[in-house]
Length: 259
Length: 326
Image 1 (cartoon, rainbow over the protein chains, first blue to last red):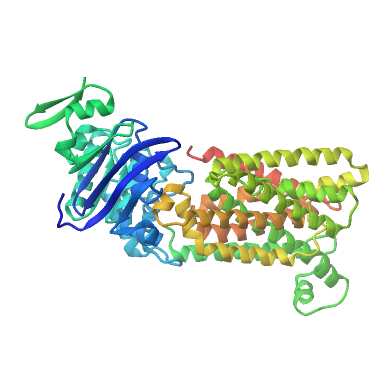
Image 2: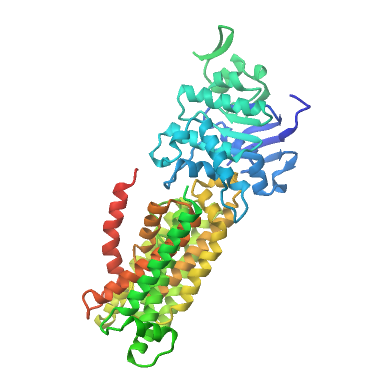
């Protein structure tokens, strides 16, 4: 890992337990500015639980999590929200609101108790919508959008939040192939501008393309953490997913295929 | 995005509608009273029969229904965010059921009107604490658990109410039924409710943007720095208290708490900073109009105002629902 980059997120001897089941044994991680970490693993392995723990929304069973070298308990919640943002796996939309209003929700931690969104905030939200290709839909009701469009609204709200550390739970959910790659390229650009990215993915090939580091949970408590090339090996993936996976080189790119 | 000027214009016109509704409530009735006499009775301390009618009969009743409309509309909007369910109303968590058990129990025993009011308020608070205690249990009070607990407690209260109705003598039965449907004719001390309405709004407005964030889901809200636990306590206690005050004053008037936040949301969007004050004014105006109509349309017979709000509310709500994109 790049020791010179500023540390955004650090977990020390972290272990997670849900009910009586250990999701992962003790492991440590450190994410610097400009890095992208991908969490992989089968269904129910605890990827989301781990992501929420890293987001400070859940206390670790063992060990500690530090955001910007401070424990979450020492952060003011609004200050923490300006430092790290979360894209939830599912975004329940119960009430009508325009796409622009929904993106503006991301500005919440930047406004004071009595503050109203300024023209600058609206400009930021509009720019975020343009980033995900929704500029024309700004006035539409979110309840009238498709699943993929709603996912892009959620991404826009997170962009408007403008955190330094992005925690993304399956950011490619509901997105078509084009927007899957577009969204991940957007986050890769943010990383190259000094932000940090932690994301849960299901697609090993997208992970291979965008990750600097990978944490592979096997759903039985085992954790492999390391650089992309260390972790993304056919035997390790086959073991974790409990399904034979082979590694193929196509036109100079490495591709993983399920048997 | 609604601009701030549009918001002020909308709130201003709603306040004007509220004033007009109150003016109609003060002038309508068996005794025709000219507008100048009403002003004189209110502000110049005029004497005489018409001044007495205005000051001691019509004004308390008009203020009572206005306050109840405002209280129920705010409470309904808060419940809808708390439960993240657009179909929630102030009574969904059993507050009105508890108040009904208290009030009807007191009526069954033939107690004085102020005891009935006190029993209604105590019943409402009892239901609130019961639902909270049961739903909070292990500390993880999800909105589904809260909703289910509230619905079950309300069902239990409904059974108790039916039992009391079947035990009541004919003379008491009618006043009990009127109480259940919501009836403003006995409201004589409306000012505390009006004060509570304003205090409740002022207490929740600093958190209005937090509510906007919470409406997008609890997880997002926590990640955006909203202290969700604290906010939910505030929402629950405040919505319950406002509902309890309204129900104590004029009984369980239906539909205002459900319809008004929806009507306002329909026109102004779901920004709680606008929705809450607008719902308060619209709820007050609507219930004032409904109650004035209820006592004048087929005078001398006075309808319970709850019947009229339901008669207006059901078709309006069905209309809104059919236009809902989902």
